[in-house]
Length: 253
Image (cartoon, rainbow, N blue to C red; front, side):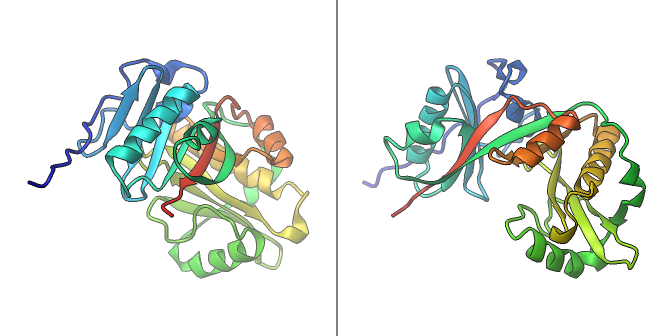
């Protein structure tokens, strides 16, 4: 007789109160509450995890050892499904003792509840629509090839940009959303490489932050950890820096 594999139960991620703790903003803002009926989650002592099944991405928050344990449990319960994960810093090293973990990248999940100081160049920001997608794609491909979100992404509500006196796009950014909760996420902010240092990125980031805070009451973003200019900019705009994370892949080879 063939053994039957039962799927993991859908658990409540908010029973431990982790979302109120420092370092757990990803849970507070990134996981929908009340829980979606189809979301698979895991809970342990000091950590919770939830699965973005279409992407094969597991998110976890809490104490690193407990988060690594939940990630390992998820990978064993759903073989071939969990292909990548994001968790508290150190999760990759702990999980790597049991599974082949590759391509770790250190991130910061940052957030703010406050409008930033007004930047003089915000008046140059305009919204872009679907007719500008080809222009945006060409701009991002040239000036930010590793952009996280591209034109046409279903998670993006709109794009914004700044043009020079000749009408040429010199900066852009997206108002996207966190997949599980729908919370506002600023993404793919890029400036013309030849015009960096002129405050264009600061103006665009300030404008997008102000939009999100006025409409939703907060704004979130992902920042690569080893990026001092971005760190200074987001700190100046009021973004909290309390949530160090790591993202990595689980190798199937």
